[in-house]
Image 1 (cartoon, rainbow, N blue to C red):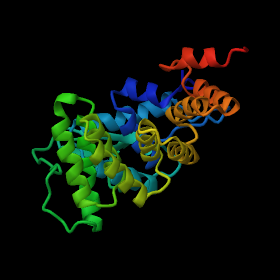
Image 2 (cartoon, one colour):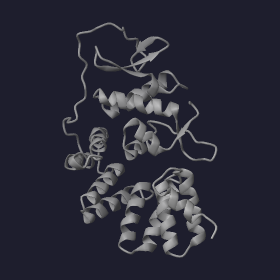
Image 3 (cartoon, one colour):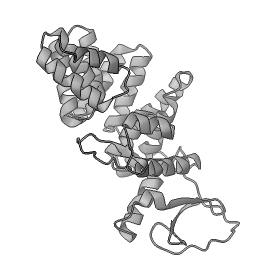
Image 4 (cartoon, rainbow, N blue to C red):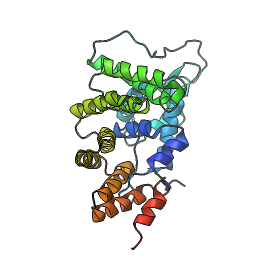
Length: 291
């Protein structure tokens, strides 16, 4: 099963994450996705093991930025290995350690005795002393708030909490594009279109090629009948993320609306390749039938 391929949606579902959260981890190189022979970005079984390792550490209360620091430290000590799969939570000391060839180490390579210890390590809290917004310290402090928002925003009953978490993230790091984008999605879900538009446009000021923001903004513009602008944003999304199935779907539908059948068929084919079991699979197959 090591060679089995999973789409991002499959991997997220198996590991109990939102696709948006997993896509962020992938984009920021915390986890990888191995490319299959048709250049589709898939996760394989080993990738799922890595993702589950991270989820396990988060469930123990380890902040994401500590996991990232540990991963980087292990890479410096044991190059060529997948550092995520080596990380372990040591309950007695309440800290992240590395197990390699039967030996426990700190992520920086220092040996650790695998003995019970009464000492309790410090676990970073979600609310640190407020740093200067935009500073390196603030950017790091924004990450746990972003992760908290990602954890909460799939539950409609906790949208208000997720909103507060994302707002805190962008207060700390005003150029945190992914946090602004998720904030925009929440505003849209709460039917605050004005705030959603402002958030997505803010993302594109920070990062003009941001795939999700272009896709979401394009969808909103198309809903307002501004098809030409929507088309530009959908195409910008695909320039950054050619594997984004939803962008191909949106373009297929918009190209049909604009009487561009050849382009529409191309996007339907790509959608089927990327989401062979997606919600629009049957529609795509029907559109691709000879008429």
